[in-house]
Image (cartoon, rainbow over all chains, first blue to last red; front, top):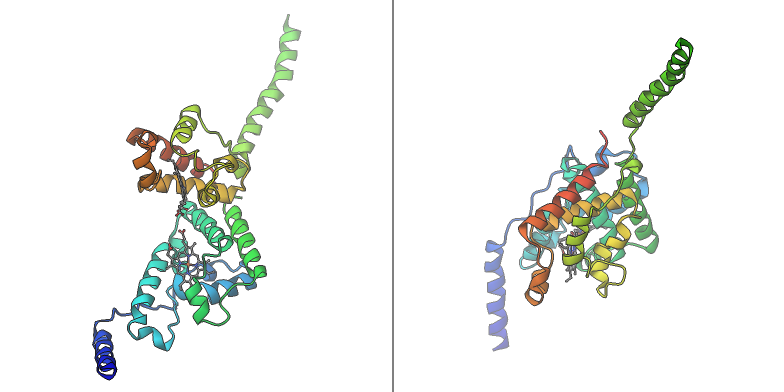
Length: 151
Length: 133
C-alpha cells in the first residue's frame, strides 16, 4: 500500500516536471543597473546588495541546481517574478527620482522590519542573512543615497 | 529740489539692483532645503478625516505608523519625505488607502474622488518641488 502510494507520488512528480513554469530569464548585461551606474556606492553596500538581494531583485539571478525541479520551481518562479515586479535593481535608472526615493524608503523599511531578504531564502543560502552591522549600514546608505538625489 | 532727487536715485539704485541680483541668485541655487513644506487647510482636513487616525504618533498599529506618520513627515530628511509623499500619491491612485476593510466599518471615512484627487496632486506636486534640474 505504502509502496504503491510512493510510486504514485513519484510518477506525479515526474509528470509535474513537464508542467513546471520556466525560470525567469537571466541577463548579466543591464545598462540601467543601480551598481554599474553609481560607482560612488560604497563597496560593502554593493556586496550586501549583490549577495543578499540581487538573486531576486535583479536580472542577474543565480539559480541553484534544485530550483528547476518541481515543485520548488513553482515557488522560485513566483517569488522571483514578484520580487522583480516590486523592485528590480537592473532597471534602476529607468525609474523617476520620485520612484527611486520611494524604493529607497521601502528598502530601509523592509530591513528595519526584518522582512528582507526572505527567511526561506536565507535558510537555503549560506551567508545571505544580514548581520546587525550590515542592516544598519544599508539603512543609513538608503537614506543618504536618497537625500543626495535632492541636493 | 534737484539734489534730493539725485540722492534718492543714487541710494535707491543699488538697492533695486541688489534685490534683482539677489533674486536671480536664489533661483539659480534653489536647494531642496529651501522648499517650503506646507499642508494647506483643505488638504489637512482631508488627511484628518481619512488618514490621520492610523498614520500618527499615537497610532496603535505599529505597521501603519512606520510606513507613514504624518506627525513626522515635516521633520523627516528630504529623501525620505519625498519617498513618502510619492507613495501617498501612489496608494490613492491605486485605491489602496484607506484600507477597504476599514471603510466597510467606517464608510464616512472614505475618500471622495474629488478629495482623493486633491490629496494625490498635493502630494506629487510637493514631492516634485524637491527635484531641481
